[in-house]
Amino acid sequence: MVMSIPFLTQLQEEYPDASIHVIVKKELEPLLQYFPSVCSKFIFSKSEFSGVRGVYRFGKQIKQKNKFDLYFSLPDSFSSAFMGWASGAKKRIGYRNEARSVFLTKALKKNQLLNRTMQYVDLLQQFTDKHYLINELKFLNISDSPKTKSIIINIHSEAISRRLPKEKAIRIINQLQKDISVPIILIGGPNDMAFTQEVINALLNPGNIINKAGNTNLTDLPLLMNGASVMLSTDSGPAHVANAIGLPLIVLFGAGNENSTAPFNKKDRTILRFGQLPCEPCIKNTCQYGLPKCLEQLDETKISNAVLDYLK
Image 1 (tube, helix red, strand yellow):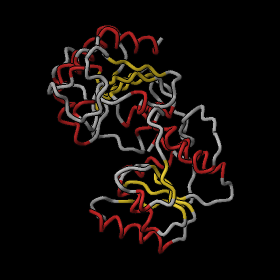
Image 2 (tube, rainbow, N blue to C red):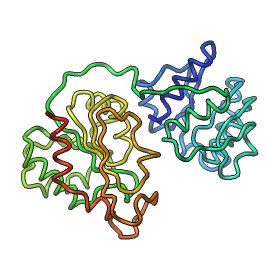
Image 3 (cartoon, helix red, strand yellow):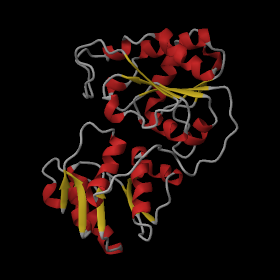
Image 4 (cartoon, rainbow, N blue to C red):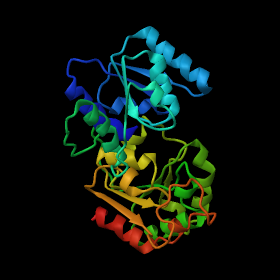
């Protein structure tokens, strides 16, 4: 979702008189307040509109509310193309994938070498036959927060192969506390609370740890990040949010290809990867070694030094 910001910005510049509406998943809707302004939002709940019939019903509801000229399918899933067809939009543009071309009026070839942010922009470029220069991805509506000397750490990710193993997370935080004496803020969702607490309980010095796991929603998370000095994170959604704010960021890559899914802004962004395993980089959600060996082998001192460089 964060990686779509340059697409939305460029779309409005290309069609300055058009009204732009977005479809957003229910759990991510709070982030829209920090995005380029849109005319309206259609909130998609997977539980309310489950399965193919639910997607069709949701698309028909869109059709009843408005008649759209263009529908851009940014995700290359079957359901997003099917939803566009059900919406009745005159032209439906997206990438070829999952036998979804039948629902698109213009099915385009994806450039796999591009960062996903630019893959979204490239949909518009191929449709308009123009080239757009994208230099930066940023939240537009973030208010200034007083800066504090603090480190935000995210040890979680949706996929096990991108999530820090418990013992590795403990060693990294212990090393940071040894080298740096500033507050450390741990973040995570409601499902991450137990794991986060296990890590805190095993630390040599839990005294300067602020536990925000499960206590920070998507409205408050950007504000929390905007007041911090630096963030250390796995390859995950929060890393992209921090990058869009301009918070200095170190991303620990396990599974996933940083050339495709790394946070877009290169300024004040450091990517750390072990890079010595024959399977790197993979894009699997589970690791053939059980726990992600590529993350386990990362040098804690190197990670701590990267954080310290940004604090300086």
